[in-house]
Image 1 (cartoon, helix red, strand yellow):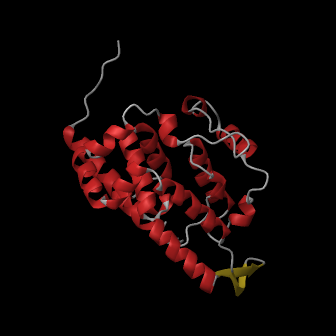
Image 2: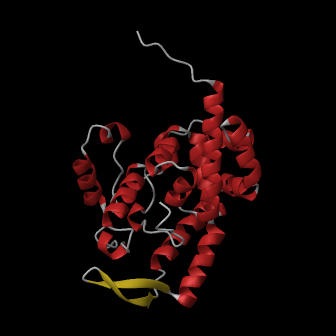
Image 3: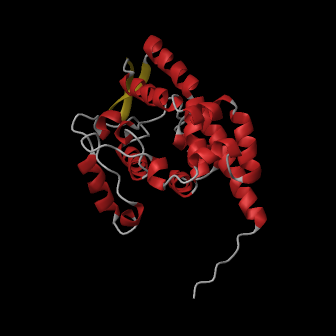
Length: 240
């Protein structure tokens, strides 16, 4: 017989506060890895919270809508000033160059536009400070927002990826029985043929392995267009 061990109230409250801090940071940058770094958790922990807690998943989506202004600012800066990259030769820095390419950010903005059309997400984003305060105190969204998510399955909240547009994310119970190599192979089979390669997205100090890890977590969480995930525009490489 299985005995359930109650979770101490203080531990539950601390967890809700940490989740609220993550959502607050996500609303500022729109980047999961940056938000994780700010509260000292791994991206895997954040995605696990998202799968397990429908209210947290909805808060996540609302935070991304709030962060849209940040993405617009980054897009404008890239369009006007480009992105400076370091050029290495035989492992040594030899020059810098400016690259102008905002395609990935434009695709990200299109995704945020779609999220902003969701009435409940728009309402949550409009009064996000109150949503955060309620979540921190109770571990749930305000009743008027939480009711809209009641009865939603994990798949509904995570979102489904249409076949032919990146393939379906594997059920979580299947993922837990796969090796890392098998999980990566499944992701690569689902990757669209015309998507950017990991090598094209990688930059110095945020290489192919980092990208593969982040994309795998997003793929298994059912994120839309997981194959477009790349280094954040404001990434502080030395801080992680």
